[in-house]
Amino acid sequence: TLIVGDGSNNSDISSLTTNNATLRFVTATNTTQTHAGPIHGTGTMQKQGSGTLILGDANTFTGSVNLGAQNVNGGALRITHGGALGSTAGQTFIGGGTSDARLEVLGGIIVPEPLTLAQDSGTIVHVLNVAATNTLTGNVTLNGGGNTWTLQSDAGRIVFTGDFTSSASGFTRPIQVQGDGDGCPLHPHQLRH
Image 1 (spheres, rainbow, N blue to C red):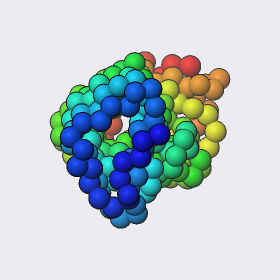
Image 2 (image 1 turned 90 degrees about the vertical axis):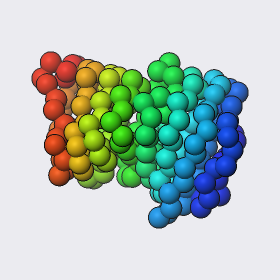
Image 3 (image 1 turned 45 degrees about the vertical axis):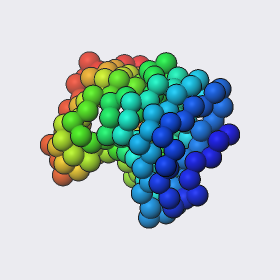
């Protein structure tokens, strides 16, 4: 495991390679860190700590991205580039339990990454649209447990074009859509079990 950041400083490494290992970014409470260089390789990326990590470059790593209870807890991963989550060969796992992990999108981007949302035990947001119209084209898997899956738009609109599939026997808990933005349109044909 390669750990980047001490919880308070930006990453000043111009390029990172995961090489079949884990790349872990650490962000402290009430801090925002930016990593501007590309991330390459075949390993996975983790985000740890309750602060915010911003990725604004096209990344090509092929492993998964883990936010929240899947591996490590917390905070926000904010992406401002459609390729920031790496190759679509991996997927991004978000939340679970009491984790406050969330994916934030902004900048009018198109994100092809498949997502897996773990239900939480409260009102924690899984995907947050910060501003502009952002489109997520990958399929979304909804894992069981907890109470709900929450999507929020603070400004602008978040559009999902992929299918939503429940890993349980059906959609027994709600998908909550909230926020002051222009919404998050979902069509019944997108919900598959």
